[in-house]
Image (cartoon, rainbow, N blue to C red; front, side, top):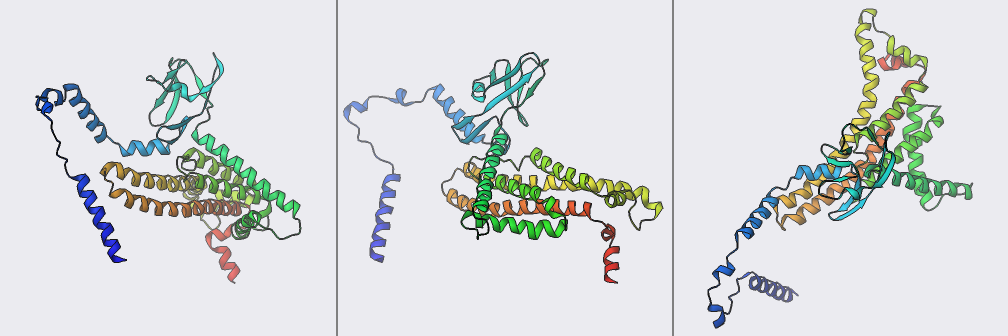
Length: 371
């Protein structure tokens, strides 16, 4: 067997040397004519070669990364494979206008008095700057959010139907898989942190967890949108938790903000602003944590693939691809962890707002319970 392997590698080596060695051309008498003028590249060819080399040297990995993680008015799955998305604009002088983003595919990126600008963010602006236009377009992130919403409705609709049809029977198939996750969120996250009134908030918590999880996982697919890496999305989720906390908070929660238990009166001018700042830091931390973790994961993966174009070596490509594959598996784990942490912290914030006694925040409740 080793003899055959040795012969195989010998043939491959000889073939590689033959291909890589310079071939000596066999010139006929007619080739003896001076062809230096024909073979010498013209000035235009030199300029084209220099421009081509200059363009290759100008690969900007930062622009490539920002292009892929930012929102857009078209969905680019791969280079050359682009799906235009609907542009929906409203202005007082023209009313409602709708067309596809492919209309901007020209040298000026303009259509019907509008221009598609690529700056820190992609936006559509009127050519006449005096006009006020409201953009309700379906961007890449909006389309991804609609897809995730449809998936959630289909999946949980089928699970609910299975429970209805198999009432009193053991779950099976996909229903049993989803039940494990649902029961874990209910028994290990929501119930311990919110308390006996957890059932009122369980639908929101499950929706929050699965919405974040689905969009985290969808964002890892090739050409997918970075929805949970968009700070506007994470801010909306954090604001929803903030609203639910303060709508359902009891008087003990608000008393704790303006008259913390056990704090001397002289320190109240210091403690009250600290407590109020803490109220807004909770949703802020929720917003930034999810945004930063998911965006960082996308940036790392795109940076690894960008190294292939920077080094321009086929040798490094398999190594980087394997490492990127390993990082992608870690990102799948991070997708679950971030959905779990967001739901866990939201449960804790709601639980702390609806509990009857807040003295435990200062350790007084634990000491009293110990005695």
